Image (tube, rainbow, N blue to C red; front, side, top):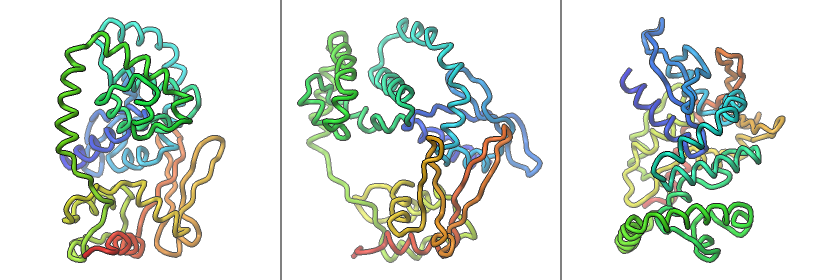
Length: 300
């Protein structure tokens, strides 16, 4: 059960880059022996989905469209408490990363998109490191192109400039740390595994996408490569015509194609306790092997 809690915490933290701030509160023991949890909305601690076990929660948070529905169910409460949130923020010392995340979430809500569609956490982190306050400096940040700069850039520059004017000592430390990191930086290559790594892969009757991702990262012994992400696995499957994504009422739904189902990818439709329907992809050994073989290509 401790392993379940570790995985839950890891996955909930991963969702933060999409602007989703959820928590899992343990409430008891399920009939199957594992812990039961309530899914909470972090900002006001309201219960969004009660009495879930670890597998149910992972299924929900692994589905982006389900997270969007959960967030939509709380949108009115969020707006009602918006002024109180702003007042609380104004009474505390300014944290640049939190301020940039807050601004990003405002843009995301206004446009009806996920927060990562505005800027990813990686982009925000780089802003915090390099503190750009001109158009040229902002365009030098990874993930900021001309289109995004024209839509969002000046608003982010305004916050960064305010931070620099009120935190001169922190700016000096940032600059010194950045110079050290730049001198030590080693460019990592795209994820790959070796033939020896392939032999270590543990095949199961069914894998969730996030479980397959974790297993691939576990067995990888190739030096200086990035960790694999669910989006990389998804992009490969999509390029092979095994999965597809469609927009239904403004919600992006991902599912296996008929070809993908023939090759070992199954669609599992689930219903949360609050009645929300969501689709989860699961991978049979045939599909697992296909993915393992793909990411073992061209490794010496």
